[in-house]
Image (cartoon, rainbow, N blue to C red; front, side):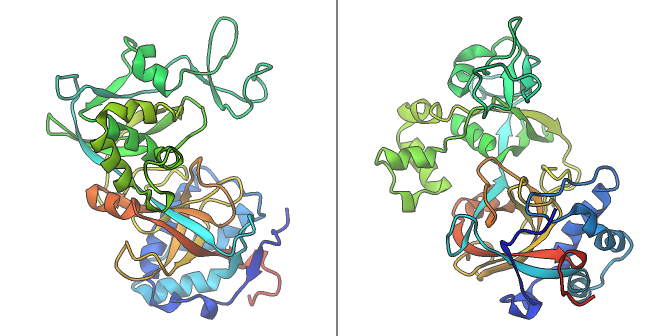
Length: 369
């Protein structure tokens, strides 16, 4: 596998704001991946960034503890060469959005107030691949429902919320608000402040499999919110003003997410995501896992993005998650953290950005070694 021609080699001096970043925070996130890969290596992405080429950097990351930002920066400059990623859609720049871990009140039992369930994976939900895909089943579907006559498409959001899975004992917790539950589905995880005093976490387990259709897109298409004003906040405000139309809009997104319970081992970190390490607020990024290799450091330059700290966003991020809406070479979803404050940040992020991958030196011809 050779490196894609979509990479253009750079020097660190060419990265705007590189010297001013907190490389120590990025190193901590990178180090978590360095320990995880001892149990299970990451898969190399289609752009040719070979996972095995990270070995020298991972080996050293497990054995050192940089004392400051300068030492952490030296680590990255020693092991990597920056390369700008040219967008594969012909655009002049890439795109970043934001995601976060909601934190909401929940009950372990259904009550008059808490009546919206988060569900565990049903027993009849099966993975669908080439080996068991029946003729005529939508090739997009990666999940299906097992029946005596073979796999079929699983129940969609509307069917499930109308009771298709009632009585199966799948309820993990109960929420008070359907819109809160929907945004937990979108984010794929949440912290739950239980009415019995516990702090719990739910995270993605599986999905019904249908295509995701965001409410912002729907509301824009029907003329309710101009596309340029679609944010999580504007969507929530519309639902609050039109409670009688919530189901109408949400059921047009047929995809439904199932969850599993997980521990909150470190309150400063997010949930364990696709790269199997806890997400680091402001340092973990979701990328297209078919193209990119998990664990790759990305220096992301989004000068119009000020939501994180009031300054132009120029940060070293580590690829540690993915998402069905995150597709393309220069496309990323920035993890903002947990709780309402993080949600306020994530909800407004939709900015042009330049993506600079830090490639292992062994992969870059002509790099100083």
